[in-house]
Length: 214
Image (cartoon, rainbow, N blue to C red; front, top):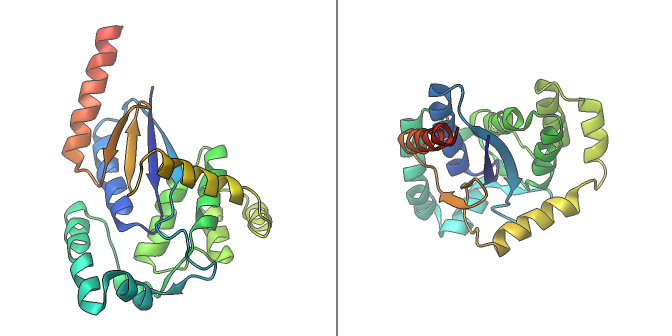
């Protein structure tokens, strides 16, 4: 198997689009060689714990309403092309994602990581839910057949918070400054929401190398 590390944030639309494209390529090759692990990166590491109003956030980040509309035009275009549903009108708040990253980490322990990432993308981009809310995160955990009561208890503590922030800082120190970033076999970094065709080519090349080595 070949390790595929994915550095992302569950409120990053390009991460959502990138995973949608990757999933299309993987679905075409059920015996693909990848073992996938998700790693934390906060788009907004200084975001208050309670998050903030979505419109205020976007207009502040992109210099007003027109700037926000220009910034999101390519997101909408690529999402439609990928078949990734994004209901921007439903998203009322931009959350702090430390707790969502903690849930992804715990899901990894139970081999449910990609499933939980899918559910978080759906909760945020499709349903417009606040994925910093502990009840929402517990509901996601329950949908992934995790112990929602235990997750609620862990979320009420500081369990793994420092680890999430340290891993985020490590990625930045290694040169990651945007997400998604995919790292193939611990050495090849692939930035951005790449199309399914690119991943199909990567998978084909890896499988040919594996066959040649056998």
